[in-house]
View 1 (cartoon, chains in turn blue, yellow, red):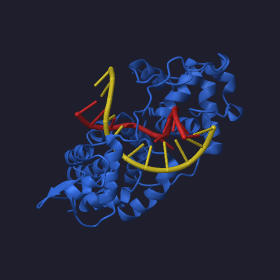
View 2 (view 1 turned 90 degrees about the vertical axis):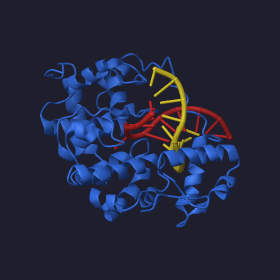
View 3 (view 1 turned 180 degrees about the vertical axis):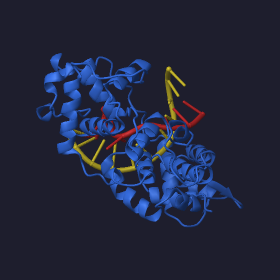
Length: 297
DNA sequence: CACCCGTGGGA
DNA sequence: TTCCCAAGGGT
């Protein structure tokens, strides 16, 4: 993308949301921490709400204040500290990232996009977020909140497309301040605005500082024509089975009998399948004499 | 590209 | 109660 600047019509949106952020930014603990603290928060916030992350993030950083400290402990420790945040593969990938940061990057969270993307569990969003929020660098941070706000304000759509496109990235990039400090501030502002005001359901348009500039409002806030795919059924799913098996293992300090573990689920076949996938993910290890455990040491 | 991966809270 | 969906990433 070449040099961009907001169009004349977009400039009021940028300044209004920056002003809104000055007044309404939540004092979240990961806004004033180390790059490692930011990275941990971004892993935890992948598909998990802020309110559920808050009680886990603090103790985690207290216990593991650096990547090296986490790398020195086991995946089992990480999984137990992760608790019920969900998607435990994220805990495994965060641990693996800590190991890579320690061994390959001298213990310092990298700040370049390529190096960040090399970390397991770090994708386009997380790499951009770490650059912006941990290092104050210029990056176009596009999370679900940002995409929704821009879809509404600029495109007049009720929700962003299912998949991000190059066109959407380019349009967003044109809006981003080029000066690094303003750029990262803007990223935080749009995310926060989407999280608190321009929400997916029941947006608080009464409290919105840009209703006058909002294309979606100008069009009468049309409903989405093609609703997103429904999330797969959870009750009775392999995911639920995995969650159960891992919860059992988290809550014991020892190994457990493999047959006994799978028998604790309603469907033996499904439990075996779930256990196999946990083994493949490296979240569970097989031990002698038919026993399994979280990966200690 | 479609699908998989946890968990919980709010409407 | 049911359904949505929440600072995504990997395959």
